Amino acid sequence: MSLNHETLASLVRPDSVNKRVYTDPEIFVLEMERIYGRAWIYVGHESQVKAPGDYHTTRLGDQDVVMVRASDGQIHVVYNRCPHKGAQIVPDGDGSAGKFFRCPYHAWTFKLDGTHLSAPLRNGLQNTCFDPKHPDFSMRRLARVDSYRGFVFASQASDGPDLKTFLNGVASSIDNLCDRSPVGEVEVTGGVFRVLQRSNWKVFYENLHDTMHAPVTHESSVVSARSQAAEMGAMPFELLIMDGNGEPYEFWEKLELRAYEYGHGYMEGIFDPTAATRDPVSNAHFAALAETYGEERARGILGMNRHNTVIYGSGSPHTVFQQFRVIRPIAVDKTLVEIQVFRLKGAPEAVFDRALTYANVINSPSSNVMPDDVEVYARCQQGNQTHGGDWVSMHRYAGTDRAVEDGFVSINGTSELPMRNQFAAWKRFMVDDAAQTQKQTQNQGDA
Ligand code: FES
Ligand SMILES: [Fe+2]
Image (cartoon, rainbow, N blue to C red; front, side):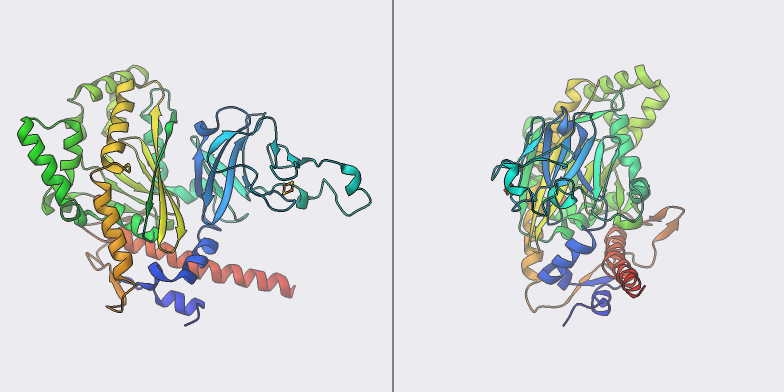
């Protein structure tokens, strides 16, 4: 079956999706082009490139890119490719390029914005078509780069919504993460955790707001946390956050889920913020915020209770425990998750320690909780490769999603609204927007 617009559109129904979207390598290639080639995608945080020359490499879909700070302080994002023979200019990871990029193959050099600087033995290039000013001889920049409160995003498309419009309802999660710092700024500290998952990238996004899985998939870690707490006669933070998944269905049903255009959304927090203000770390945090903002605003900031936020295509910031899980599709059945943990500038050090504990216990490669999820994602990948059926259900509370001014809100916290919303966005990127782009290209060709 060829992948024309009709075929692709037929894979997404209002309440279910064809399993092919998780398993077909051809669809994965189209996603890289039509979603990752167009949407705003998170590249990294400004604090990862503090000094001029500092760089951070990452992937936008299937494209290796480099975020770099230039000597004037500006941040650029360029493809990691030398225009001579195509070598990667910098190795994967973080480092400093110094005053300019220098290719490891034949030493062509480039300014930190990618512009061609020099090539050795220029004599040999004279009297040829080689023109150092021509863009073909520079490192290519991403079409659009923008930053929202220090979070740098790039888009490979020169048209489309601006970053703020694209982020719409979830920009407030980034705001809240930054506002939790008494100076309104955060920084990535201490490197990143990386987890390679044997599953399609979309499953991860769907699971972020899948409240029905928590008490089932995480049964083993919940039982362990509870028996350990009983033995200790106390429930320390490390166990409390594991125990959270074991709440009964009635608890999850009461939570609110929000869904926005482009597949984004967030889920209401599962830890009561008023209870949190009774522990010493939260008290110290509150005092530091109240000093800057006053008590009322400090209460408002810490009272904004969100669990996972989804920025579709980029990953998931968690405001309360200061982390960003960056999701990188590698292949149709392989996804890399990179966990960045943020320090809130000016906040007590204990707040950062708590965030590190959360990341370690819940999301890191040594976590007791995350492997439960990774296991079921891999099982979905495996199961969907059999001939045991073609459709994946998203029926829970379908048809009841309540439209609000800027998006949708669930009428029940176990609703599969987030998944339906993500696939509505997927269809728009993959079919509607793609058809429009095709038409524009044709018109230009005809003109
Ligand atoms: S490939 Fe970069 S200088 Fe030759
Ligand atoms: Fe989970």
